[in-house]
Image 1 (cartoon, rainbow, N blue to C red):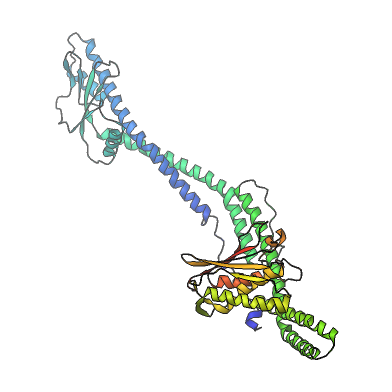
Image 2: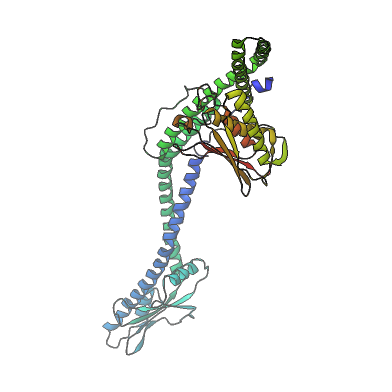
Length: 480
């Protein structure tokens, strides 16, 4: 094993500084809160300014009618010019006209009346028109002479027509808008501050703890001293903190197991040469034993052969697994049925020589038309491992069938054995733990799955707990 394979790559260190209090998530929340509060205030301001304008005009209609009541105190409904100018001044109008149901009377008027620029009838319109008219006033810079027509609040049967300037109303609307803006700013800042500190306490600070915990865990995943006390919160943040703590424990345990396996792999790789020499010596000795014409020796020699073969297979499986990495594929085009036939022939030889179970059979139900582009040797090994596993757990028959799908070829491998135990199902693809028989390494299915995944597919168990064992193996129709 090379130095590059034995020495793990250096872990990159974190170069991302933690954001400051007013430059991270909290600052964004503060800005967004102010923005949304101002938007809400604008939504409130829009009908408010239109209502203010409507109230302003209605108030001047009421003032105009009130000013005209002074005429009723005179015998001829007439006043002198000085008093008329005084009444119009207080009503802020150029002229006031009352229209009774039976007659139209010009009540008060200045000597020189200006031309009327626009007329507003308070008896007509809806809220959209009032909003439009209000903003039209705000965005004008010149003065217009308005004629406002409305029902008198003093008498429902009297219509009041009053002529007045628009500029004072616009100034009043701007003053009202200024007060609303100042109040909105105060409310938005107060609300944003409260929301900011609330979110900072409830969300940002816990998120900072989570981020800091992740950074520390990334720096040294195996250091179990860098732990935060468990959170007692019952909300989503508390759940996230507890789940993060559990995940770190699981990852730390997995890393410890990986380290032990890596150490084991390095040790096995180092003694591989000596172990193979020892097995070669044992094979030479067993060959010489076969030449001895002794019934007892001849009886023991096949068992010795079998034991040595199992030792070689165990060593090879362990070395293949700890070698790691994605296997490099040698892609070729072949018929899947022919490959399964080779697996069947290999199993017949294995059953007679190795396991001593000549009754074991392979049923080849694969269509001859199914072509595969894959690594023939590795796929042969994967299918042979699955068939051998079935024979080793007591099956007398294993069946192969295949189906062509849109992108994949699905191969189903089922046997008539006793099925898998619950413990074996739970640890199916765990190395050194997933074997369903005594003395097994649990590497067979792991190696098969690695081969299948290198072909762009996967291996899965599709049978239930109380059913015969059935695996589904999928590979891409055309290898990558």
